[in-house]
Image (cartoon, rainbow, N blue to C red; front, side, top):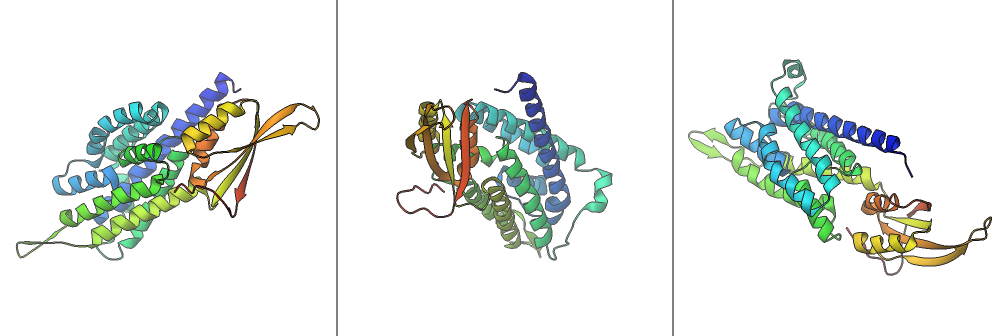
Length: 301
């Protein structure tokens, strides 16, 4: 068991990383997204379009819109997840409002001027993808539609979190078609470019985040030796919707009888599986990649 000092230290580092990712996200909006007139997807994408049309700050709208979602996540998803996500949302909103008109950032703005806009879009997608990946590895999120995706994934684990998010971002992308228009002789001319940029940003960000969490493994095998196998397998059934194989074993040195659980899960469930295992002391775990599975295995995407 960890001492309270170790636990406190870990919590402090967790929140420091969350604050750093919030700052990085705010910088990304200032440097790459806002100057190039495209919505990045999600609730922040809606906030970006509102700022484009009305001037109302992305940070302020994001903060206000996330209040009911944070409350929902606290009661319907997980308290720690909701609290950490709320810290990110508040920090990102404040950072953006502070940096929005910061003179020291102005020389670094990447305004493509409508030419080769794909480059700032890629930079923003890569940076924000890293932000997503770090936050989810810390049991946090960037708020907004992440709460919706997490809730859907919790109720129906077969739906991959990141692809649920991408589907919602696609809706935002279509809305951007009607927002980013040009006035030509008194007529509003629509442009597909912001739609493409939003979809590209969303794809890159979700791909980066998914790879950061799951790696390139198709599946992962856990071999668990513990005094708490009954409790662990119940959590596996309930949380991950996978089964496990239970075996009898004998310690070579102690000669004591032990039960061993063998379980194979989808790669994107690694973080959730590790969270389960951390609850139980005196648990020894072997983790290894699985290259191919033949037989009855439920691939929860």
